Length: 486
Image 1 (cartoon, rainbow, N blue to C red):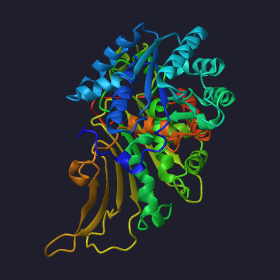
Image 2 (image 1 turned 180 degrees about the vertical axis):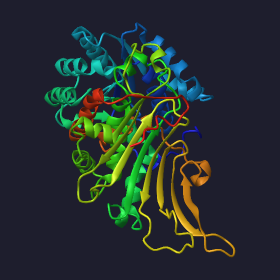
Image 3 (image 1 turned 90 degrees about the vertical axis):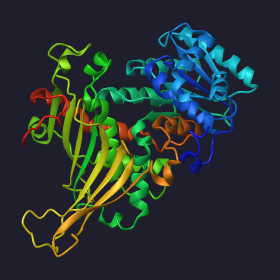
Image 4 (image 1 turned 135 degrees about the vertical axis):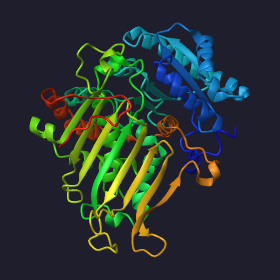
């Protein structure tokens, strides 16, 4: 138990965690469920952050049965559970499995009948959380079948809720995203829809808002008058693993740019929402994305973007011969509003790079006057860094006099690490723990709204189109990506 307690979730209390709840996982035997969802649910269960009356229903094509699924989950949780055998058995006893085809209406009737049995065992009607851990091509048919089957109808007008959690990518461009969103809007209310960008649930990323709006020494400087540039980076040292077919039809920009990096940009650039009201925060993020300067011509794409592909990518399993899919991109973005006009935001991501990291680097403008004998190549700018991973933390680089008989300046750093804070006793929740916790609690602050999704695709789609006329640069594995002079 010590591994999961205390948790940062304790500061939020156990809101919304009393009513009986059923979590239905579509794609229950898939990679996401095995590696992320089941471990996250087990940790929340051990820490007491799930309803006492809880059932987890796996829904997938494989014919496993309850015991087969519990065996599957036991194997998936072997490392996570460790020596907690008793807790693991209590958790597994809450698992039920129903086999079915996502495309067949009869499967949803089978699911409905199964949930009635589960509720009978629980002794009352339960809240229902449907988690779509499936490929995006399955989203629309599942949405329609869920609505047509009546599974999304709450226990009553006054009691209970049903919610749908859907993974990214949400659509493939602005047209497909709009069509999918229209379908959702016809079938569900906005408060039922939880569009997941798990990066928003990372602890260090959440702290950007707290840091900005709770410290007077930074917020007055958070604008074009004092900030020179913002760099948002998401680097991966691994390749596409076994995702060849899926990734080759997607590419880096759709995979992480349209969602993760633009959401990080929105958090940095948004106006003060006045509090942690989900609607206000999501509206503030959306306004930033709606203010992005469009890339409207191939010449803009050539000037403001770089795309690359690591050497050997086309030899990966599932990748098409002669593939033009990017595994790296760098984009210079601008937020055209009063606060940020002409401040460049650099969005950069790639696979097979020399190191893995995710961070936001904010470089302030240099001082106009300074005490330093060496005035050539003056670059004494302050730099604020939010490290999202690894080693989550915040650091500020500043300048001070060197010790001794000199007037030279040298860089110093103020920093703290989330993991080292409190002697390492506070465990940082995994992003999927937070996603599931907030999904059950009904807090949408870490989930993207319709306006955010559509604004992001409006910016990204023209870039993808113009890339058909711009070069794809090759880069070596383990490098820093393609180096292209602009």
